[in-house]
Image (cartoon, rainbow, N blue to C red; front, side, top):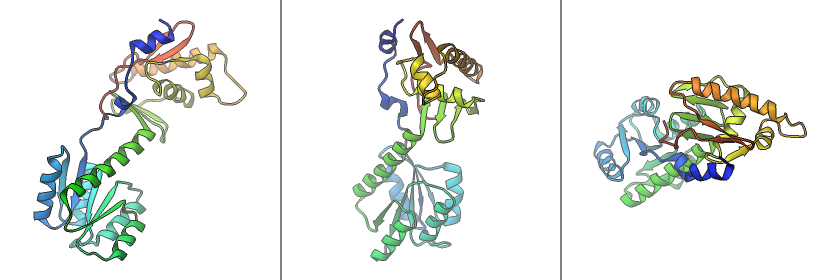
Length: 253
């Protein structure tokens, strides 16, 4: 099978690589009536919603749920929402934060944004505006995740951490093997030539011989096939190169 035939046999919309999951929202607000209203509103939009009445409960829920969006009230009974937002950012937590407040002081808004909040909405708010803002933050997070990861059914490539995870198990790939896998998985269904793989592994003037690339790909394939739920993710296109055909892209794990 030639490169064109391989591509035709395995076509996929690139957007399908990152099929969006249901958005998970955590609302930290001591107003139980408002929290119930917001939960009903967002669930009607297909989102998963969880509530916490205090900052302490919110922190525990953040760790447990790993939400896509955090709705954070400014005035909490135990900790000021601004302080909680600051703590999250200092700890390296980059969950999108939408600050909610009944106070209309522009200073609070500016301070909240400076402390790491992504958006700000005063109470009372228009329900459609809340939905729109939550969706916008979720899309922003998903776009950032797409740039960081390639996800398939059972296989995730973390481009920042430079690791491959198959069925929740980190694969023992060498640096070269990971580069090869990224080069192939970035173009599912497309034949990637040995020359292109060589350039991905060793940019610059030095280029490994085709035989060296073949050996490295063979080692990569063995590790993929030996992994939990392993399968033949990479196929050979005789005389031309290799193609990533390890199943259709699936939902993110």
